[in-house]
Amino acid sequence: MKAKYESLYQINTRVWLTSLAEKLKGPAALDDIPESALDALKAQGFDWLYFLSVWQTGARGREISRRQPGWLREFHETLPDLREEDIQGSGFAVKNYVTADALGGDEALKRLRERLQTRGLKLMLDFVPNHTALDHPFVESHPEYYVEGTEEDINRAPQNFIRLKSGGRERIFAHGRDPYFDGWPDTLQLNYGSKASQKAMRSEIMRIAGQCDGLRCDMAMLVLPEIFQRTWGLQADEFWSETIATVKKTYPDFCFMAEVYWDMEWRLQELGFDYTYDKRLYDRLRDRQAEPVYLHLKAEPAYQNKMARFMENHDEPRAAAVFDLPCHKAAAAVTYLSPGLRFFHQGQFEGKQKRISPHLVRGPREAKDQELASFYDKLLPLVTSDLLKEGKFTLLETKRAWSDNYTNVCFLAFTWQRQESRSLVVINYADHDSQCYLPLPFDNLSGADFQLTDLLSTACYRRAGNDLANQGLYLDMEPWQVQIFQFEKASAAANKVDKTTGPADSNVFNNLSCS
Image (tube, rainbow, N blue to C red):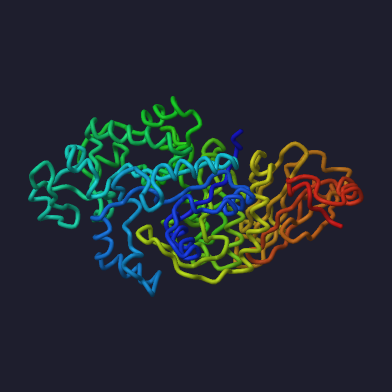
């Protein structure tokens, strides 16, 4: 049964297989991914594995990737020993929605999915609605599916248009783009003003839906009628609601995740997306101000539960390069202990610093950040526990510790409750010490003592329930400090210590207590 709050791990497929090939001393495809690697990912508690860039790319895209000066500078920064074969074209310039031959083709993808299913893992892949590669079959068979330009267009904005042979003659096609930037030179823009084009892309999604359990839809807002009209001056029908409904009629549990920006998350959720990127939370955490984060987390549960929350992905800089270590830990606690889809990226736990472009199939060798890895080793079991996958989230308000102390606004605090399990998360999201009183939402505090066990450090605190009920919990925390408390009656905690000789079950919130 689907958990209320799931976790996803994004894998850079081509880079992973290149690394595996070095160990095997020969080519590596999807079939060569070791069972032990899949077992390890399952053991970490993930529900989804998102395999990036499995689709067929083309020679035209590869050629362009290898000669674009700006891209090449970026590639050299990532790989000082860059080789031509490291550049295989963007995984988002899709020539055909067929698994790349180098990965083993569609049959290998099918076998991978079956291996995941035996472990209770779901497979997510990419879909790029806005554009295709320059050498997609549609260019020859259905040029009318694309936005075409004129001589005036290509003379005015040569960076946004390209001449290509199609149907026995030369045509001018638009590159795929968004309304704020120049076109992507390895792509062609699909025309969502064309009913035939929409029907063709809907058919592509329907076919792909038989090969995976979910799709991450690249820049999903670009094909909304208002955005498409703003970009191209063309009227378009709405695409997503009918498409999602059509797929879910055949595959009711199929998952759609939208990469979306410009505060259009709710719009896409209304159209049927199961999850939408929460770039706003990321931006606010990056700005290192607690109050905007607090206000963001006050949104309606129906909205929050559909947010995909991340600290990095293939588009964003590495989290370890953006957040110094103390702030990284605090931001991770906010991101992954909040409701929604918890979205992790390959290399994040190890503290990798260099973002790998989706044009590259090899990554740099980087040392592992042992302290950060140790932190994630403690955090991830909490994120994937029953309490945080199925529990109730409550955001808390703070009170000043004394009248002229304003640092209470630096705290982010919330609780999770499920049956008898209760936890309290407190974070000082500031670069200075902060103090506050924290009123708690728990019932029946008076007349008993309570034990708070920090699950990140195993430090223990005993507090009188009367004080907690009357004043709240007093907090005095260091810069960026995170504490995740198991909250229980002191008598229950004592009984657990006396009677338990080892972990009782897989729920870490029930296993850790003070000695």
